Length: 407
Image (cartoon, rainbow, N blue to C red):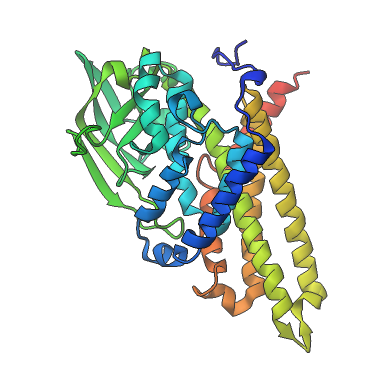
């Protein structure tokens, strides 16, 4: 069976599964880690915009960098449903932590889905443990939503490809070891997407840890929110990449489809982050509204506050269900542009709305760095931009709706 792009689809019976007991045990372990290790230091690292080395190490130990990688390569082999719940839980405490392993897993899934047997055997075991951590390098200074507008090129030179160009807004660009880089192997191809390929490009020598030749790391980009994580720029100047291990799938011209396929799980992830942000913002608002008093009674007893809380709760629950729907669709196999797009759009808009209302309920305290609300409020806008803007999601939703319901 094949999808609309002609790619082999995995039968639903072969999709990853996990028992309810095992999933709950994993979620409980993550909850304990969040309570003991993350909660006490998250604000400190976030406000300092400091890379949380110890927490990243913990996530490697828990297997999160291999969450979606098949067990035969050392991964946990989780279904997207379980993965999305993990992302939502962690995002309730500190959303930035989910970015470290999400971008990494988008890279890994491209290799797992499209790579040659040799590429899978070589890269996936080291991706699963977090020994090699990296991400997906798509965005450029003049190419974000329009991926076909990238200018980074790669030319074949014997047994290697040489990459030239620069990427921007790349997660794990500074502290990471490797990237899946979207390049143009045939800049003159028409339509443009037929000239695009994905190369697995180490930014450090996988054996020695030395900086890879031809790779220059840029600065860590200062951001409104989503702090602590190393979002940065990276440049390639005739950077050599082994052709056999680097060209994903061993065939040029397939990169655009690989990149957009990787974005599907990315959109489920971002939607799950929105659920986490909304849940925490709602939880903080409900608690504060019962403590803060005005006119002789808790503000939770004022109708104006009740109207806010009621809408916040309903939208948060709706977002949870839409993410669950998108994750289940992903686990069934095939394209999930429609489901992932709807979940991403609705859950992230909800996250921003609920965070904003929670801040207003908190009043001046919501504006203070002593409370988590201001961080939730700063983190939420990114979700409406990352992994495809929400404006583009609505276009994707409409196009898929029409394609699935022809007259």
